[in-house]
Structures are given as C-alpha cells and as structure tokens.
Image (tube, rainbow, N blue to C red; front, side):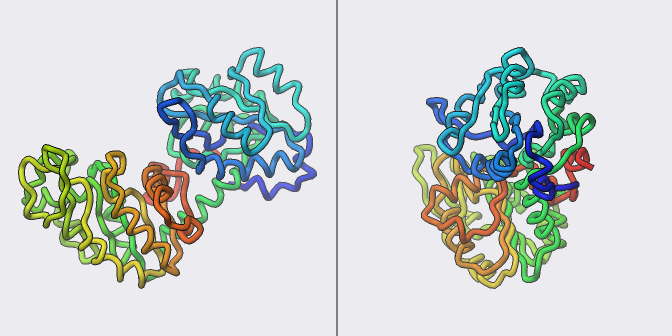
Length: 375
C-alpha cells in the first residue's frame, strides 16, 4: 500500500484523481452538517492534491438512507475551500463537470449509495466510476471494512494509493496493536457477541482493559446481578474474560428510574425498574492512576448513553487522558463527538481516528477489505 503523498507534485499536475473521501458527516434535524471533524481530516488529501495541480473528483457516501444528498457536505466544504458540487453520479451532468475541470479544481459527486450497485460491490459500477480518473486514492478509512464498489472495486481498474489520513490511521492503529507497557484500554459500546474476539485480544496485549458502556451491563448480568431495563447483548462474557487478570469493570453506575431521575449506586444495588446509563465517579477514580501511569492509551466508545445526554463521565475521562503523557489513540464517532462537547483540548488527546467499526476490525485483524484492495 503506497500513500499518495509519496508521489511528487510534478507527477500529479493535470492528472484526474478519483478520491474516495471520508465525507460521511452527521446532519442535524435541519439537514445541515453538525460536526466537521471528518471533513477536516479529509481535506488533508484533498488540499494536497489540489495544491499539486491535480483535478480532484471527489466521491463518497453519507448516512444510511440512499436518498440523502451530499449537498450539505458541499456547503460545509465551501466554508473551507472552493468545490463544485454535481447532484449526479454517472450521468451527463457529472461527465460534463469533470470534462470542464481545470488544474487544482475539486468536483464533488452525489452520494454513491443512490446507486444500489455501490453497496452491492458491483464491478460494473466500479468500472464506470474509474472512468472519471487516471488514478484512485482511497482516503475513507471509516468505510474500509466494507466491501463496496468504490472501496474494493475501483482499484481493479486504476493505479491506486492510500490517502494521507488513511495512512495516518494505519500507522497509529498499528501502534495500538502493539502498545508500550504499561498500557490501558477503554472499550465501550454494545453487542458483546461482536466485540468478544477483540476484547480477548486486548486482554492479552494490554495491561488493563476497562469495559464500559452497554458492554458493562453484559458483565453485570454474567455476574448474576440485576440489570433492570438496561441494554444487554444476546451473549454474555464468560470466565475467560471476567476472571482475566487484566480485566476491569465499573465499580459504580449511574441509573435512571422510570421517571427519568438519575442517581449513582453500586452495581449490586440496581433495581428491576432501573436502567444503567453510565458509570459513576468511583469508577473514574479507580482508573485515574492507571491512565496517569500508562505509556499507551486506547479508547473506543463513550462510557454511557451519550445519545441520551449521559456524557459527564466520558468528559471526566477525557480530561484525565488529556493530562497523560502517553501515546493515545481514540476512535468511535460517539466518543469523538462526546469529547468535542467537553472543554478538553483536543490537541492533547493524541490521535483521533475517523473510524468506528473500521478501527475495531483493524485492531482485531490487522487488515481490512479496503486495505487489501490497495495491494
């Protein structure tokens, strides 16, 4: 896999470069971009190519609804740089816009998911997309675990490279796969059955692994404790996880009763009508010295139901991580969003990954379909 910034600028001037960007930005209720973190990262490659005089044909996806347009992404981009948006993928409007491009121009095409062949990984769609470029750059690490047409198909038809952000992701997450000791990992989120292999791998590689979020509810259930109305997985951890010497679980939790009132209590005091929504202050205090001593910190997933407003202890941990001198890798869309809502200085948090599921899968396997396609 070769990174695009290894190509001399002189070799890029005037070239049509098809770029699969990380353009899957969150939208608010009004349909406007609500967070530009991923766009900021994506612009590293876009700006590099444009400055070298390449003609950048930008493609990507947004959300899960195929009818959603890339128009809000274009508006957000226009606040940073010049971009021409074409609400079309393969038709005459798109082809005319690309044909009219000058050196350094950036043209953004419509949401690839509007064509069902994208998600299906159809080679004919990939070949048609490839006709827009003389070379291909994959800078969408966020989607590199998907076998979509733009992710794995286009490299069959064009000389292909990884984007600048993509290469940074691989370098930083590779470091997380072989952490310096003492090391500390925080893993939140849900669905233990899908995360079990990664949890077991982290337990072998990290000195301490703190399980939070809905995954912690699975731990409590496996320990025979009441979890009330809390979100749980289809599968619970067994003794190989629960009794591992590197495993840590919350020692207090924030619960919400049927009336929506929240309070902190011990895990063994949760009542049937309550819902566990976050960890508590004692849990933060427990892991604080481990964070302070760590030389490497990995974090994916908030500690509580961020989408329901429970982000206080995620913010508290972010402050502890920011004070650490460790090398840090943090990922997951909700994790980044929660941190950005706090007063924590992002520059002190180390590497912030654009990937959620892709980050977790790469941690586990050391490769992804999008990486394999680049050769």
